Image: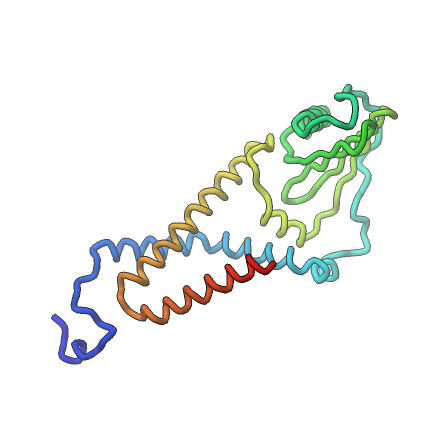
Length: 221
């Protein structure tokens, strides 16, 4: 039963609130709490990617970025020519990594020319560059020094299910779940805003302003 004072307030409706509202409110709150570390991770990673020169000033040291781990004779037949497709290059790179006991690393590979295959194997805490000089029968392995900015940006962009590592696939699955959770979190927030029937105008203006800025940037940039 509303009081006379409440009846005079235009923002308060006499209609009953939806029965699902308490559940949606709790869902929205707990999703927000669960997503907090992921929001922070992506926010910090985006800042690092967006301010690369500043990050270089903050995190670079006088120590060498790459350290030679080994250089030795190595022979493994690869598909001839430069025109090998991406799948062939990845398979060849994976075979090389297995020979080096690095078969569970995530990686990308580049067949620069017929006689050179470069593989970048990476984890969150570091990266390794493998250069296979095919015509010389030689392989060179260099380890990259750890830098906090690379660690943060790596967490921002890490993923993909085509990598051999099971943990990388698990990470990709968790990221998919986070993406779905973010969509549910947004929808539940809109539902709460709409069904409470308060401050519709203010919320609508904020929503319109945010949408306008996003669409404008997409069209202009």
